[in-house]
Image (cartoon, rainbow, N blue to C red; front, side):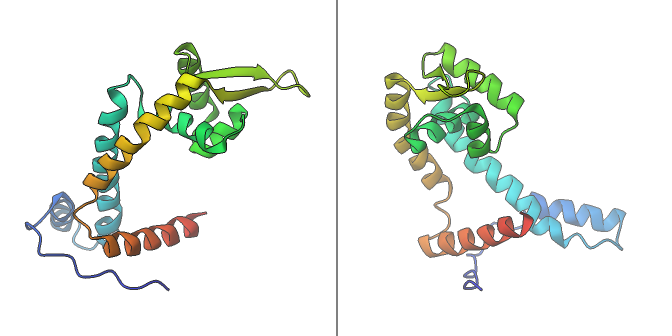
Length: 171
């Protein structure tokens, strides 16, 4: 079991989740809305952090999902199949196909037929794709760092451990 989260600093008062729970309490007082305290804030926090990073990649004409594809290929340091990209980015096959087409058209990745199975293509970054990821990643990380700066490093570490546990329990 990980350490308990430190007490948060005194906040500015009720947030949108508190207001939604209060409104539901008036409509359905018998319902326990406590799961919203976590799930609602997870969604809002993820959206806020995501928007910060999205601004950085949008300046390069990319979506965050496209940048995630490029990052998956950069991290792997070897060609991946479209299925491998889908698995690495947790995206559907259809969504991955659309992203791959756009990134290929932009000259950021290339497809080559698999030598053992011509029906399968291998995907690799072009030199321009590699340079783009290497240039953008520090800025994306800085944006995410600023977006999470309200939590001190220890609180971030503990929260990350709790979120890992939550995700592992969901499979």
